[in-house]
Image 1 (cartoon, one colour):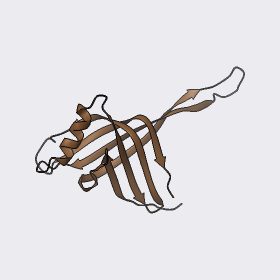
Image 2 (cartoon, rainbow, N blue to C red; image 1 turned 180 degrees about the horizontal axis):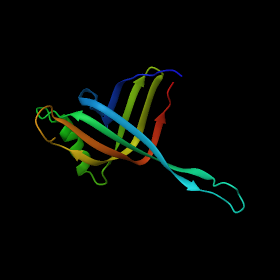
Image 3 (spheres, rainbow, N blue to C red; image 1 turned 180 degrees about the vertical axis):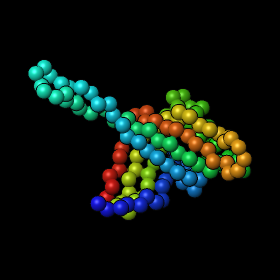
Length: 135
């Protein structure tokens, strides 16, 4: 088994590149496991349902330029609030990306406590997501 390193994560909303403010990015793919057992089968059988993508993005807030806040707030103010977002990472095995319609669920615009202004957003797929294969 090879060990792979993730580096150069990227994040953009509607072609606004927020990569320079990106601290961390996590993308998850889930699906329901549906029971397909028929009568007389000794063991339960299952199949995978439709995919569902979620992501957590941590960013360094930039109150001086307001690039991060203004970009995210524009998505939250839109109706419907779904925008084209690209999330990606370079790895030692190649690049992977998730592009398509996403919507922002939660947005912590002002973090608690003192220190670095790190904010977090949670996003969910709101349409078809194109997964760029690791090459």
